[in-house]
Amino acid sequence: MSKHALPRVILWLLLCFTSAAAQAQPKSDVTLKIGTYGGVFDQILMRYAGNLFTAHTGIKLQLINANADDHLAKLIASKGREAPYDIIFLDDGIQIKAIAAGVVSKITDAELPNLKYVYDDAKNKDGYGPAMDLYSCGIAYNTQKFKEAGIAPPTSWADLWNPQLAGHVAVPALDSTMGQCLLAASERLAGGDEGTPDKGIAKIAQIKAQSYPGSSATITALLTSGDVWIVPWLNGRTWNLADSGQPVAYVLPSEGAYRGMTMIDVAAGSPHRAEALQFVNDVLGPLFQMGLVFENVYGPSNKLLSPVLAAYPDTARKLPASPEDLAKLQDINWSVFNANLPKAVQLWNRQVISH
Image 1 (tube, rainbow, N blue to C red):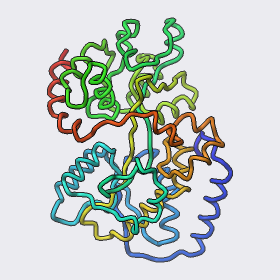
Image 2 (tube, helix red, strand yellow; image 1 turned 90 degrees about the vertical axis):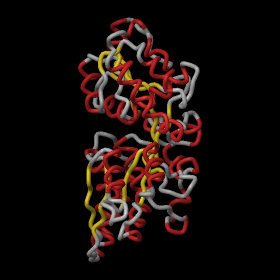
Image 3 (cartoon, rainbow, N blue to C red; image 1 turned 135 degrees about the horizontal axis):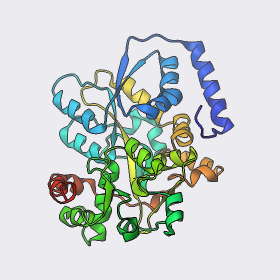
Image 4 (cartoon, one colour; image 1 turned 180 degrees about the horizontal axis):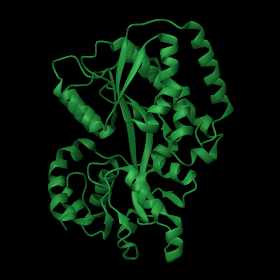
């Protein structure tokens, strides 16, 4: 079991659901193909949703691991034929691209009973898949290195440009969630917005970076080795590292951290739409959502859990756990951001990477 302490009620529910499902043991010839992120995410998905779903429906699950951009590329390449997935998990910014490409389908309230319990801000306004979880993108830093150097803990996005941190800042690659959050923050610090990537990239180019990591695994290694002292990162990733005993902490910048969401969609062209919707509904239910909170430190999209998490303040402080927490986070205008991303990549390659 995870290093995070699970409330007894979750363990009790898991035992009850497992026992009840084991008695039913129905049969089905259906296998749902699900585009996932792999690693710990898949373990939690199966532990709190997948295994139980198969036990009480007989429907088998095939998890296909890749990053969200690769999943989207496969869906687009298969357009007009049977989709390579029935269900797909996508970052909120990438979901917009999937909708534009016509490779995910709309879902009605009647098809998804648990949708009524999802935060309004976590629902797609045009009726596509809702958010499975909520997280924030802020700043992670090595508390030991800051203390040894006599540097005050960061409070602002602007602290990434602190001369005392020159050579110790990781600037995440632009194709990562963290890199895109940094670009949005930099655009606003420079007096622009998502439509002015030139201002944001010019600002980022002024950071005296130690490296330009492309994954959270690399950031983990850099922070724990002490090579990097500060980096834009996600709340769940940072707290998982801190809870393992590493000297790291997480900060919501004073200008506002950015809200991120993992969306769950049913692929257009899925031959198993009804079964896929059953699984999506389970993922939006309280058992899986609480498992995700306590095992991976991501916030639930199911609003019924807000008062429950209030009883666990040590956990709730690490994630968006209530409407008040969500109100403190900023949104990126993904439509404008995505439209300007090709230009940002060109500027990034010229001004940042080759600098």
